[in-house]
Image (cartoon, rainbow, N blue to C red; front, side, top):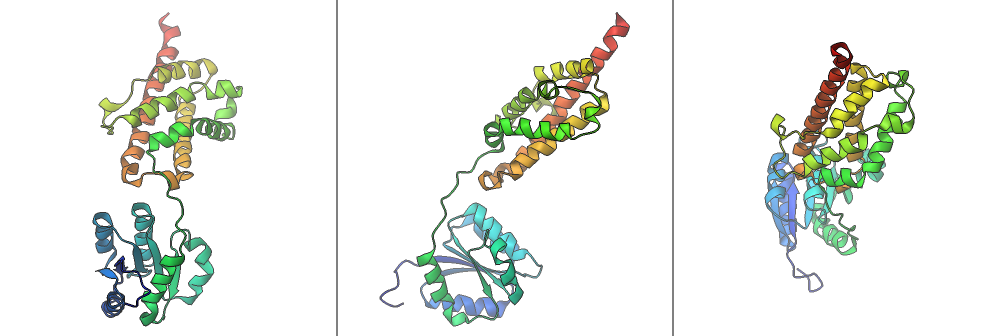
Length: 284
């Protein structure tokens, strides 16, 4: 280590399924003062990312499947966003895709490159790198609460484009109906710490009951009720897609399952209310 080099032993996660290449890169980096954790597979790399902290990630792109390197980079980005990420590829034409790839990786190293200069390259990138401000991660419910007005607007735009729903002429307010309250009920369900997809966890929704009665009076068919519920799920997932950089991915799967279950539960309640309203005149 030269006098000008910082004494800090930066920790590197090195991922490559080629034993010889991995050993040479490890030796070069360790000789220059880096602490190296080597992984021969994506599974091994993900385990290290989940249990250790790193300053640098260097990963091959093909191990042995195309895109494996992106899996590792994406995991590091979500778990340790301040880590420098270098993606190694054996295909020179990958440079043409650099603009898109750099959204996840800081740099692409095209094989063959001089392994002896790898440590210098890493130090240079670490010294000159400007780390983007870290975004606070949010639960799905928090994002939906923040975007509830946008959710309603997007749902209405989709509903107005549906030929099936537009068989009934309604104003925007009439078309929206109880949707804002239905979304609020969903957010309440998502806020529960023990949220699961059990039937008993579904929120009893006064809005869903009222919605079913309203849709019957407006001339909706049961099929139209199902269709607008499907549009709601698409809209909710589209909102999450637009907020990926804010999402807490560690809790995404259970939250998505809860969304699907709660929207279905609301549809069931609305449908029951609709059928009750339909049977009421016959019983009178």
